[in-house]
Image 1 (spheres, rainbow, N blue to C red):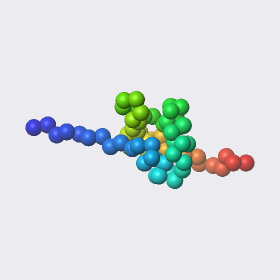
Image 2: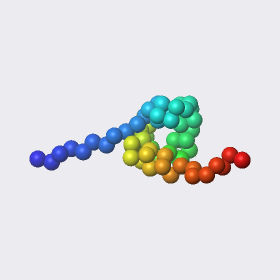
Image 3: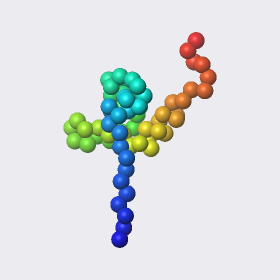
Image 4: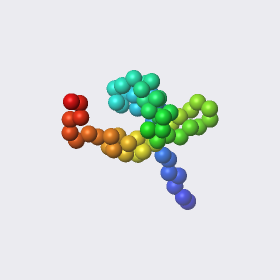
Amino acid sequence: MRQKQTAQFYTIRDISEILNTDYRLIAKRITSGEIPHYKIGKKTIRVRVDEFEKWLKDTYVTRNTMG
């Protein structure tokens, strides 16, 4: 018998809690396409855990860009 593989997903709220930032900021990043996501129905948005982790790693800054 084949095993089912289930993908892990985050909600916008999950991501905002992980990053300790405002829900609206994450929603804006998602709707702009910056954070890859899946739209399920009219309002339900989910982000795969592995895609979120890749996006987060890709946004890592190695030097000070603030001044």
